[in-house]
Each structure stands twice: as C-alpha cells, then as structure tokens.
Amino acid sequence: MHAIPRYVVFEVLKTFVVALTLLTTVMIAFVLFREAREQGLEPRQILKIVPFVLPEAMRYTIPATILFAVTSVYGRMSGSNEFVAIKSLGIHPMRVIWPVFALAFAISLATVWLNDAAVSWGRTNMRRVIIESVEEIVYGMLRAHRSFSSPFFSIIVKRVEGRTLIEPTISFQSGKNNAGVTLTAETAELRSDTRQNLLSIVCRRGTLDVEGQARLRFDDTIERAVPLDAASQETGEVQPSQLPLDVMSSMELQRKAKIAKIEHCTAAKAMFALATGDFAALTSTEAQLDAEDLKWAQIYLYRLQTEPHRRWAGAFSCLCFVLIGVPVAIWLRNSDLLTNFFLCFLPILLVYYPLLLVGVDQAKSGKLPPISVWLGNAVLAVLSGWIMRRVLRH
Image 1 (cartoon, helix red, strand yellow):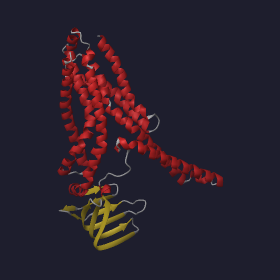
Image 2 (tube, one colour):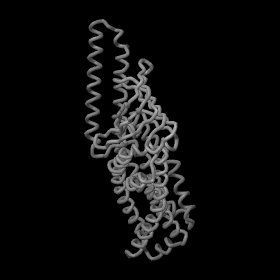
Image 3 (cartoon, rainbow, N blue to C red):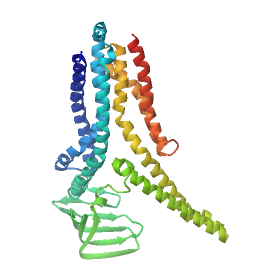
C-alpha cells in the first residue's frame, strides 16, 4: 500500500533535483555575468563569489523546478491511466497526492531559510569579496574602458601601463561637508588597505581644482584616500531586502522611535511658530525638509514591515505551485512534459505574479496591510481546491 506513494515521491524528487541542478547552473551563470559586467570582476573574483551566489539563484529556481517536477510526474501518470488503475485497486487518489504536498511544505520551509541565507550570508560575503578586490576591479575597468565611476569619485585615464595610470583625471564628488575636487596628474597609482578599509590614490605632478574656486599646481605627489565601500559602488542606507529576518523586529522598533521623534520635533516647531506668530516658518524650507524626512521614514517602515511577509509568501509559492500543478496535470491527462508545465504555469503567470506584485507594491506604500502580500498564495490555494474537487469527482 505504501509502495506507490513512495514511488511517486521518489520520482518527483528525482525530477526536481535534476531540473534544479540544470536551472540553477544557468541562473548562476547569468548572475555571474551580470556581476562581472557591472563590477568589472576578473575570473579569480568570479570563482570566489560562486558559493555565495548559490542561495540567491536557488531562491528563484526552486519554485519553478518543483512545479516542473510535479507536472511531469503526475501528467505522465494521468496520461498513462495510472490513476484509473489506482482507483480500480480501491486506493483513493489522495494517497498518492498528499505525500507530495507534505514534501512541498518541507521545501517551502527550507526556502524560507534559503532566502534568509541569501541575504545574511550570500550577499554579505559577495560584498566582502568585491570590497577586498576593489583595487583589481578598478584597474580592470580602467584597462578595459579607460574609465571608472562610483557614487563618490570617478577616474578617466589615457592608458594604463602595469599599475601606473597615465594622464588620469580624478573627480571627487562634493558632499555635505566637503567641496568637489578634481585632480589632473601625469601619473597615478592605486593602493588598497583592507585593514583600514581605504583605497589610496597617489598622484604625481599635476593640478588640483576645488570646484573652480581654487587651483593648485603640484610637482611632487598628492595622496587622496576614499573608503573601500565608496569605491565598490555599493553605498547608501541598508534596504529591508538586504536584512536578515532575525534583525527586522529590532529595526522596526528603531524606525518607529525615529518616526515618533520626527513627529514630536515637527509638532514642537509648529506650536512655537504659532505661539510667536511666525506663520512663514510653517511653510519654510526647514519645515518642508522635516516633512520629507518623515515621509521617507514612514516608507522605510512600510517596506520593513512588508519584507518578512514577502519572503515567507515567496518561499511558500513552492507549496502553492504544487497545489495548483498536481490537480491541473491530472486533469489535463497529457503525457507531454513541457505542455503540462506551461499549461500549469499559465494560471500562475496570469494570477499569482500580478497579485504578488500588486500586494507588495501597495504594502510598501502603506496603502494595504503587509498581509496583502499573501493574496496570490490564497487565490492559488482556493483555485487548487476547486480543481481538486473536480479531479477527484471524476
């Protein structure tokens, strides 16, 4: 009695592992090509980040491959009238269906962990490899394109000879506390120090221009250092999608405290302006900046509250895909693998992903509660129940 369910689970697992291996390999190649193009990575750096790309790739390939596996196995069984034979033996079809549902549930839980590993382990270590390789990355970009740019500085050279930059023009962007600086030199050299997290640019014989306000000629050397993070093209506030799940609760409390502080300060300034009759202060530039800070703090909080639901709902798409794939594959009674897969994927493409995108977008903007991210999963589950009743009835 238990031999048939074990056989079905084994066939699903076998197909799933083979499809997952092939599709993940293609996905990893695509991610590595993208990173190599955007970051200017050399083959040595690419090999270093391969293990860290694996969780990122698998979080996308697992739902598709588990759907392919169940539609292949159950489509072949239905097309070969195996379900008719099972019924003739007095075995209810659910006996060979529910073990695969349990398998999909376990895979969904594993995918939740995988999503978190992709963020807390994969992306963090990818970033570490890129930062440690900044010097080689910059040299590689300059040799290939004779230019390199990041949010903090940019370099244009005539050519590169070994580790010497010939006639470089280096521009440092202006910030809140410093003016923009442009260095033009005969030669320059890059030196990275991972211990101090600095990339030094040593320029020899040239001119230094401070936003057109001052110009200085130097005949010896000038050294300018920037953080390796700035040179790695990965700067800015950490986004919720880059945070592990175990820190989101504390981050949410910190963000709520920040919003409360901004609201209290804004209310105090408004009350003081009204008390002193300074009505112009209510619409001043400072008041507008405070309102903008409050707006972005609230948007960040909405995104922070949405992210855990998005990860859990995305991971449990594995279970929802199986819930819809099994009854549809049995209903179609078609042994062709690709036909079953694409016909099962069609309702997912037309229903699940639009609802997921709308739910995530509306939840991030605060127009809907974060739980709305699960809307696509809920619709697939209801649709699966309706199709399953028709399949089991006949």
